[in-house]
Image (tube, rainbow, N blue to C red; front, side, top):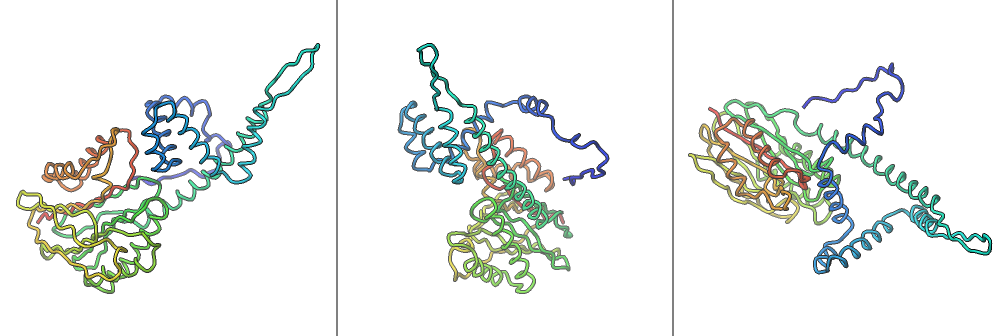
Length: 375
């Protein structure tokens, strides 16, 4: 991915790079799928403002009652989520819109709605809300850049192996971890993990998990010792009800032996002797049980054998009908594309998933690691 660059010469006329209002609006309509995008935005509003209980209640109502209750509940939650001063401005704007001015003219009475002040107050509220959103967006953008800098910029290079790492956040920042550690002498460790939750909180926990893994990997050495100490730290230092699934594995260029521990993550798929094998589910996720003895697994990979590790953001990708991509489709893709090199294989998997999703927004981070022994 090319790096972004900006021209800071300052010689251009001030404001010349600012977007034009008319051009921006025309571009919005020309992008197409306006109806689909509006439907998606309305669905996001409903998902954010309505609880699961209320959504369930709406399903049992007739269409007229459903629309009334949906509008009432969303409006109520919207008002409650405003700051006190903005609620006051909203009340004043509504009062202004419904105020009636009485005039006496030749013995008759006429009524006129005086709503210009109301529109102006609502515009102020929208401006304040947008300001908050833009500030939060700038902070998330900075967080995204920091998170990106923590993740590996290139794939690991180790003699006899072909490896590709991929991760894509559903939002500005994510809770998936894909990383590797080089120990020298042709030995590396690979990690793929998924922290519970989404957004900034998950990203912060992911950064802590990544830093702790790197510290323990270089000092403790043994897989079981690393995972058991990592689990204790995660149990003690992170908020309650948070957990992280993780696969930690090691391999080296001297042989085809791969050792790994699966802590509650999606089972890896192992392609061996023209068969696709789903490995064991492994142990509980980090943060679930403080005192636990982890079980490790080991496999011997022959030339052209492949190991595929992935997060549930792949199998749980949804199409327009909200149907899951599913683990069976994942297995079919792996069996179909295992003949290619890992980079081509990764591209074809992403192409298949994106085609399945269509215009649907990704709801979970998507990550995977493909490991292939080439000689």
